[in-house]
Image (cartoon, rainbow, N blue to C red):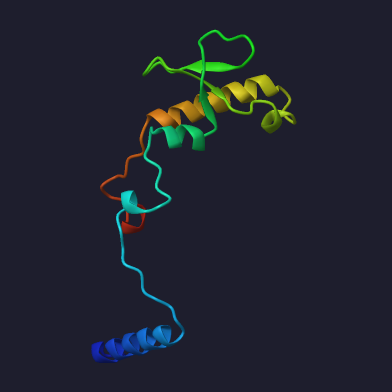
Amino acid sequence: MTTAQEVKDLKEELRALKAALGIRETEVVSAEDRADFIAPGSEQHVAFLGLVPAESGNGDHITYTSPRTGTTYRLEDEIMAFMNFHDPEKAAQLTLQQKVNELEIPPTVPESAPPIWRP
């Protein structure tokens, strides 16, 4: 069985080998400090989901008004993604509703979640 000292020695050898190859160890930063972090509900999140704020009752586009906030959204591209569906209008409407729900209901992490799921 491997002893604790042998494990420490192996870790040090690995660090030295990585340093020789130019591989740096990165420090752990919080999710909010990462360059690719998008805050839930932000304008960047709206754009990331492909949503566009819209006027209620606009006949040119499929719109969805959120029951939580009363804000009306439409999809940025409601045609191309749904052309192969049997009923593209219904598929676009359901997708729009799902994206608005994703935008307005921030994700939660259960207390019993393993550490990998805790950003």
